[in-house]
Each structure stands twice: as structure tokens, then as C-alpha cells.
Amino acid sequence: MTRVALRVSSALRQAVIQRARGRCEYCLYPVEAALFAFEMEHVVAEKHGGATSFDNLALACPYCNRFKGTDLGSLDPQTGQLTPFFNPRTQDWADHFRLEGAQLVPLTAEARVTVAILQLNQSNRLAERERLIQAGQYP
Ligand SMILES: [Zn+2]
Image (cartoon, rainbow, N blue to C red; front, side, top):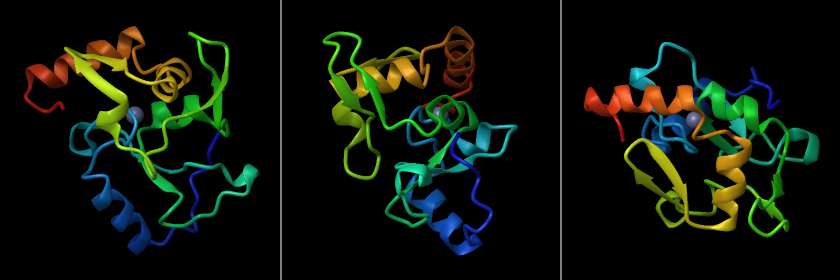
């Protein structure tokens, strides 16, 4: 899994959180509604040469971070093609995903592998998102 880099300075951490507008950059879970700590996720894992820098860090909830691990992508469930994950540093979320109630609907191959591997529509995550929608905290 992507390690929580303790060497991320608090200034860098704050900048990453601010850029993400306080939401997981994959599932949009809001930091303010979370009882758990969010993580500094390496979009390209350190294992693959990714730097601990503003351009390679994303704000991620522990679920997304854990499921993504050090992976860079997977096989598109639709085509079987090796496909990179949605990249929050170079791509716009709204071009790749659409919200349908609490469901995150993938619009692209990158989004399909991201939904599959990060388990974005796992039943407990849908239930949690439903709760946040009711509370007016999501999206
Ligand atoms: Zn998330």
C-alpha cells in the first residue's frame, strides 16, 4: 500500500488538502465527515519512482488508499486492456465519473479500473455515502 509518508511536511500536506478541497480525490469522501485520518497518497507509488511532491500526491481516504496500494492500473473489466487508474493530477474527476445517487458510475476505461480496484461501489461504502447524502455532506 502507499505508505503514509511521514516526511510530508505540514505545509505540503496542507497544500494537498486545500487543492483537493478537503475531499478524497477518488471517491469524494469529505474530510470533515470522516472519523478517520485521510492519507497522503502517491499517485505514482514510490515503488515505481513516484516522488513525494505536490505534483504526485493526492488526498485519499484510507479505503481508496488501501485498495489502490502501489498499483498503477488494472485490466479494464470491459475490454481486458491494461489501463491506468484515473489520475487526479492530470485528469478531471467529472470527465471520468458521474454520481447516480450514491453510485459512482465510470465514464471511461480509467474510471472503470478505478471503480473496480478501489472498490468505490462496495456496499458498505454506498451505505456510508447514502448517509452523507441524507446529511447534506455529499458530494
Ligand atoms: Zn476515497
